[in-house]
Image 1 (tube, rainbow, N blue to C red):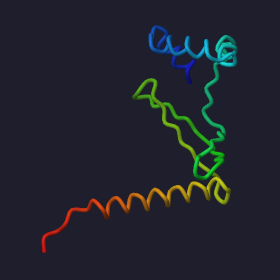
Image 2 (tube, rainbow, N blue to C red):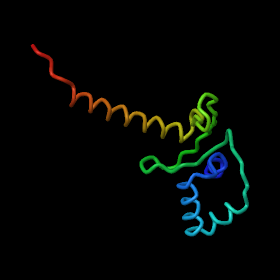
Image 3 (cartoon, one colour):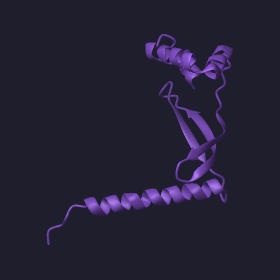
Length: 112
């Protein structure tokens, strides 16, 4: 994504500075940046580690939005019945319970 953005905005001073900083801090980054291997994956699988539920293996689709150049929508899904799907359900239930608690505590009082 960084190389794609650099191609779109080659004169972006902040981006140039970021690439320079990363190049001085990481040999791996410097080698990969120098290889100029540009690939845009429109679909695939990503592995993430969440601090509460652990490893998540997510399929993704990247959709470019024609009405907004440079903007894309990333959609992540998990196959039903997998540990990742179960972990996402657990996270969703935690988020819903937190939202419900916040609503209960901040609900305006009604006059009697």
